[in-house]
Amino acid sequence: MGGKEKKEITPRRRFFTDMAHHIGLGAMGVLLLGGYATKAKSSPLTLRPPAALPEDDFLKTCIKCGLCAQACANRPQNRDVNGKQLPGTIKMAKAGDKATIGTPFFTPRDVPCYMCDDIPCVPACPTEALDITKVTNPKTGELDIRQMKMGVAVVDVHSCIAYWGLQCDACYRACPLLDEAIKLKYDRNSRTGKHAFLKPEVNTDICTGCGLCEKACVTEKPAIYVLPTEVALGKVGEHYVKGWDTKDQQRIKKRNLKDITTHDERSKKKPLDYLNNGLGL
Image (cartoon, rainbow, N blue to C red; front, side, top):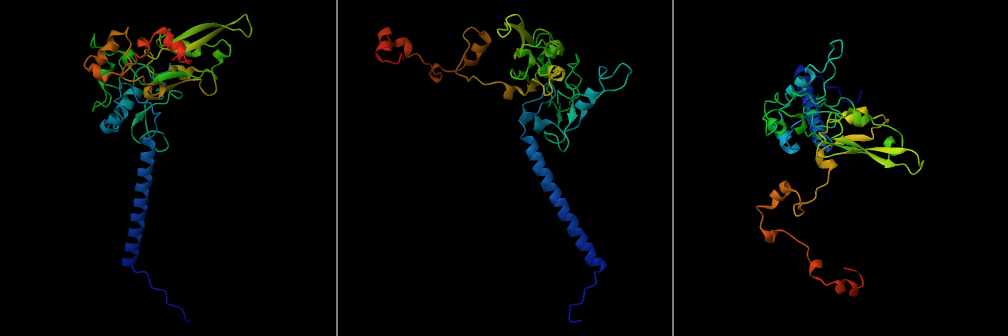
C-alpha cells in the first residue's frame, strides 16, 4: 500500500536487458584482452625461435599459425627411449605468458632449443617471420645451426658456484658447441692457495642462445641464462671502428670523412703541454 507497483518484466523487456548485459560483458572482455596483449608486447626478454625477424617486424609478419611449434614438437629427436613424445621447445603464448598472445617463444629453463641439424621450425613458417636465410650458410647454401642467433648466454659471477671455487662445468659440458661458445678460464684461487678456479666465459660471437647451458645449471635459479641479444649486449656506436678488423671497416666505407668524429687533440700537443696544465690533459 502506498508504494509503487512493480512493473511486470515482459519477454521483450527481458530480451533487451539481456542483450545489453552481454554487450557490456563482451566490451569489457575486449578491453581487458587488449590491455593484456599490449602489456605482453612490452616484455623485452621474450626469446623467439631461430631466425626470427627483429621483434617489431616479427609481430607484423607472424600469423600465429603454430606451424613452427608443431614442427618442433614432431621432430624425431623429441622422443624418449620408449618413443614417447616429449614437450616441444617452442610454445605458443597464451594468457599469463610474458609474450604476445598466440606468438611462438621458448623458455630455456623449461625446454631449451636442442639445435636440430635440419632446424625444422624455420622452413615450416609460411610467412618468413622465421627467415630461413638467417640460418643458411652463405658459402654452402645449407642450413647451419651455427647461424642460429636466438639470444646470448650471460653468466652471473656472483651466483655461479664455479666462481666460488667449486668445481662445476655443467654449462660447459651441456653446450653443443663444446669449448667454443663457452670456455673455462683457469685462475689461481688465492683464498686456498692450492686450488684453481674454472670460470665459464661466454663467447658472444659464437653463442646461439639455445639455452642448453641454462637448463643444465645446477643452481636453484640459473647462474647462466639466455637474454635477447639486444638486451644482453651493449652497443659501441657507429663512430668506433676496429682498425684491425676488415669486416668492421666496411661499415664506414660509404660515409664521408666529415661525418666521422675523431678526437686527435692530444696528438697535436707537446709533452710539456701535459705537464704545464696540472691535469695531464
